[in-house]
Amino acid sequence: MISRLDLIRETLRRATDRLLAERGPDGYWSGELAPSALATATAVAALTLVDRAGGECRHAAAIERGLAWLAATRRPDGGWGDTPDSPSNLSTTALAWAAFGLAGGDRHEPAHAAAERWLLAAAGGLDPDRLAAAILGRYGKDRTFSVPILMMLALAGRLGAEGWRRVPQLPFEVAACPRTWFATLRLPVVSYALPALIAIGQARHRQAPATNPLLRAIREGVREPTLRILAEIQPASGGFLEATPLTSFVAMALVAAGERDRPVVARAIEFLVRSQRSDGSWPIDTNLATWVSTLGVNALARGADFAQRLPAAERERLVRWLLGQQHRAIHPYTGAAPGGWAWTDLPGGVPDADDTAGALLALRALGARADDAIAAGVRWLLDLQNADGGLPTFCRGWGHLPFDRSGPDLTAHAIHAWTRWQHALPGPLAARVERGLRRAGEHLLASQRADGAWVPLWFGNQQARH
Image (tube, rainbow, N blue to C red):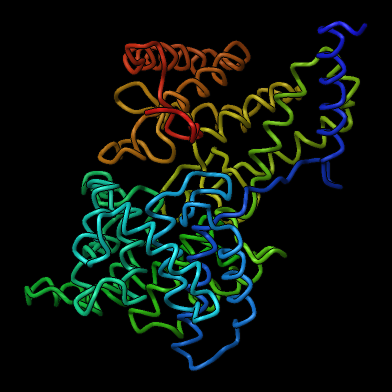
């Protein structure tokens, strides 16, 4: 009879075999996110609105495939969640409902009607004021998600004749200010949402201008400069953050702002067309190569046979690849300093605490030398550390909104990375790491719940009771 220990060993061996077999031809892993109803709904809406504004039906096939996927993956209760296996939620269901209203026609009426029934029960009604209040209430003072959702509802005619007045104005004019001011200005969106701030702010200004003539004139005066900034920060791939929803929201907002023929829109639409999957869906993000590669390395490194399963030549190839993904210039719209890593090897990635810590850990496991690149990564995390001792995701000092605050998951990951490299670093940097570790540990103790748990900023559990 096989023992439990032998069963665990055999399972581990098979999992390791599978993980190694999943590598691409260049030795790293790519991976993908689950298909997303939210991403699919926003992409369908963007393609529809761009076609409609140009009097075209160029993307009709892609739109229909997206709608068919949405209809086929509707939850039994009539709504949609974050993934096809997730509980239905207000935001995703509202966006799918808007997409069917924009592009669905009679052929998708059952899905459209089911979404209406779900929203009626969840929001307490479909009248514009009630629906807008429910969506704004879900996110509080953070406008990063609520305003794009309301914009898409307005574009679909779901918020009534005065729908745009129910979409809060994003102050796109502040994008013309120096980037160093952004944290101080306490913007109503998170640090990575500058493209949405500009595009959706311009759409709202075009559709429902401010009644204050001075404010209206200021916004009119910075339209062109901020549109130039938007073009400058668009990555070569066309996808902002390599993310379907953000890119879709930017494209549809520019259509609503009367800017359908801008190159930014064309590049965004090319990105959306290119990233649609064979089943008709879109993911939230298109590529996680850096993130899954560091996860893969760090998992394999826990095995006693790591050096045999991943020979020296393969380890050296991964070191070169990971070092090649380190950002070596100031990021164009978060303003992140050089030295960090993003989740992807594509140009739309933004350096962040989680991926930088993961990359440093993987490089340590792979036997990388403590050279200038490693020191830059360690310093990048130290420079990101907030005044409360914790680590945020993208930018230091943007603690005004929950998504920009310190997270215990990010802080713990940074602690792990710092401790693995600390004794290989030059004395002054090692001493600075020691101070950072002390402050980070104090933050973790302060952020622990009374029941002993910590609540992550990222990667929660959809089944957990909060």
